[in-house]
Figure 1 (tube, rainbow, N blue to C red):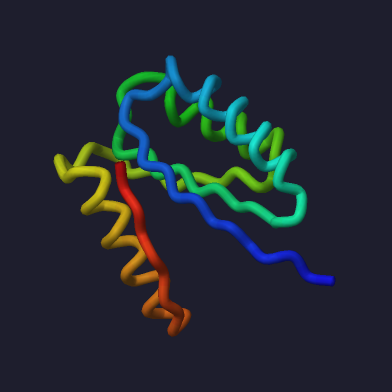
Figure 2 (tube, rainbow, N blue to C red):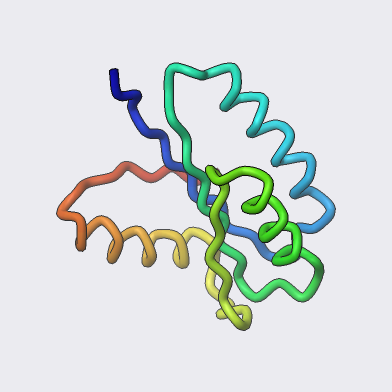
Amino acid sequence: MNKELVSLIIPCYNEEQVLPILKAALVDVMNDMSEFDFELLFINDGSKDQTLKLLKKFHEEDSRMNYLSFSRNFEKSPKNITSTILHFFFKSLNQACILGFA
């Protein structure tokens, strides 16, 4: 039986201090919700700290964790960057999505 896929998109900018905490929390949730398959896409918006290094490490440790990295900060809000990426991604797949932002 195929599990439903849950995709999370997580914008990041200079998040090296909180990423390990976030990763641990997300792994706990994914493990608790084993009735679903998960994929995480971290979007690094030109961080100047060790965010990209951590995201690469996360991907090596867990294939459900992927990343996209911009070479510089584009001074857009994470909402705008994420919605732009999703717009083109889902348009190409001819799919719909519902976005929620805090």
